[in-house]
Length: 113
Ligand code: TYC
Image 1 (cartoon, rainbow, N blue to C red):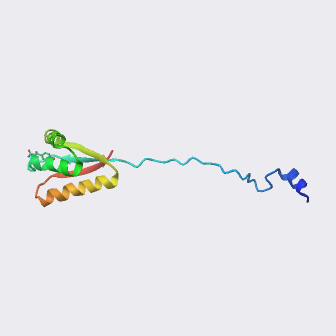
Image 2: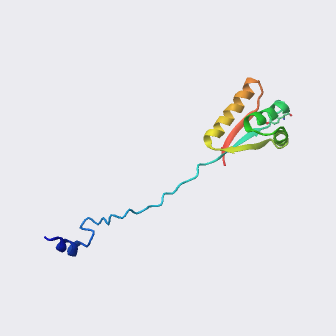
Image 3: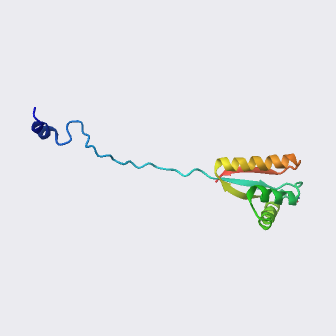
């Protein structure tokens, strides 16, 4: 069969259906889930210790830390930050370890936003 005959029977792409043109398919990218880090109130942890934790591990100023500490004290809990799963887990561990080392019952948890 001549080239002319192939083009006439199968079209210019030949018989394999491949036009040679790359086709872009849309890839759905999902943003990773975020996690709230919560500080819980208790009757024993000193206020200044909580303020120190918020400054040390959450980068708050003294005034910000004092305000959030008071919110926890009055309302029972507050969100102290929102992070990726890994960072939230690290913050919770840092707070829990620091509180335990100082023998305070302070509780810190995380939950999916
Ligand atoms: N309620 C504590 C007190 O009166 C203070 C406190 C605030 C404790 C925030 C925990 O997450 C907390 N000493």
